[in-house]
Length: 198
Image (tube, rainbow, N blue to C red; front, side, top):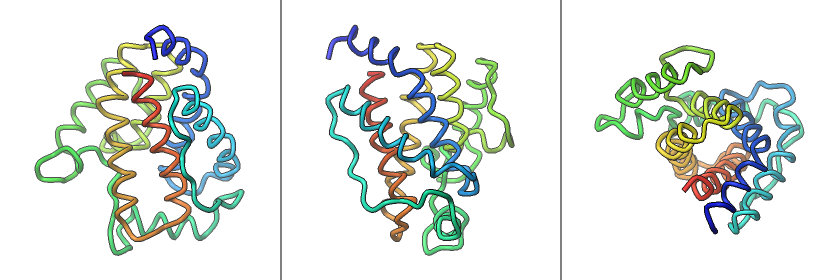
């Protein structure tokens, strides 16, 4: 694919890409968003369209999700992300990039600096600046703000590697079908993004 073609696809899908970053950001904040899962079919269609436009295979999605967030999704989140299951999946970039594999390390300071320099700090606790929901929300703002240099650097160096690491950790954890469904969708989206931004 030529650079001009990638730029055309990138420009044509700006709104869809930004909405996908927002969808995944909200999903990984927690399962309590009332209409979140109702948006999933639209997210699936957008990821499939982006994958097809870039010549990639569409995501393999097993099963289906209910139209609204329920108690089972809340239990899956608790088991996977809140430390009540057999294996906890971290949403923090520091855990995947620091030698000690602990929270609040170099990635936190690095992404906080990037947010400050861009003047686009996502709302919330600053100690969570390097978490997947924060980084995906920031990526959505970059895509919408048409800041291609910062967009490419931040997504390829932070948001995509973090998201793919989280997807790997979800795959390695005991099965949680609803979260795995969205994780497979996120993986396909981020692989498309990496190709688009290469």
